[in-house]
Length: 427
Image (cartoon, rainbow, N blue to C red; front, side):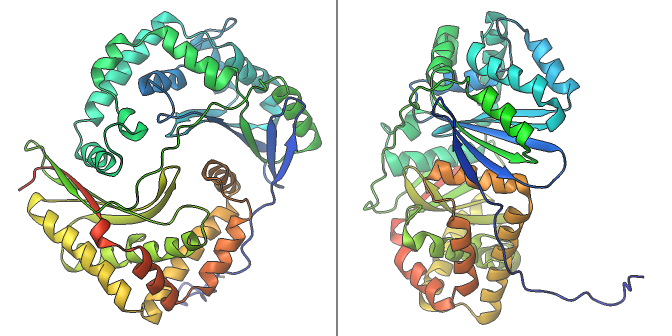
């Protein structure tokens, strides 16, 4: 019997490794990336197409298109499609990001003979009925109107303007709401044809992939289009610019949203993996520097978080927080102060050990949860990283030193290049 009066032993996380990925190229050129595991009798399909909000002329058309993919084909209505997915207990989701459009389907293996033909039908024969189109546009207008009233949206938009300027796709994709009133079903259908119906996806499948399941995948996905992927608009940021601050006063709001961004190492570079750990130490988890000092010790905010983002436009250190208007300057000043401290003082061994444990725990979750592993591989594809990047990151975390973290801070914690966007009840 378990003795609950005795604290269990704590073991160091070791031996982390991802489930192997194998790539099969189908006769139509579509690549099927398989992550097979002896798990329950189910699987998840993740399909990735080139083409996101930064790559199209009308981002509202793209959002409407992805929201309407289940709204009808030549043979089935929206209700019929929804009923089939629900009847078989499957879960389907569609999302459009900055440069990629992604569909995921989670289902029991025994339901694939019914679901895979429906999936290919949706991807090759969606009709975008006029009535559903009008309803989705109204819904998108309402949701966008609400989103743009939030301090988080406004501070993030200010950062995009500071980093890129008004003519960059990142800024132009945030179209005026009035553009929704002139959006047509023809524009939406044209994007469907360009991104989904006539271009080749990258497909990831994870689960109990038996020979029979694999045969069903190959049969279904060999019917998909073989056209070239949609062209991406990757416009790199200018990393030589000095930092700036922009504010948007929203007096009706209670608090302010503060976004702080510094251009940094790009994904795939040698420094990127080391800098990721340095940014975690700065503000990437609940026990980090920024969380302890700004939240716990000084009580300036309920929460603050830092992350290294490897975007197509370039790597950035992003720090986000919400606080009262009178605390904004103190929060920004303390962030800069902690960055300067990390440039001049090595992390104490106890702090380094905490950072290492946190990061190893996060990597452990990715390796132990099969669909998290699938998401990781899909993210590698989107970011142009090698699939063996996980093992390299694991070795880096195990061997990281305080001196290496300090070196990354000295190289990339450039407070003079910090861009700050503040939106809310600014004092």
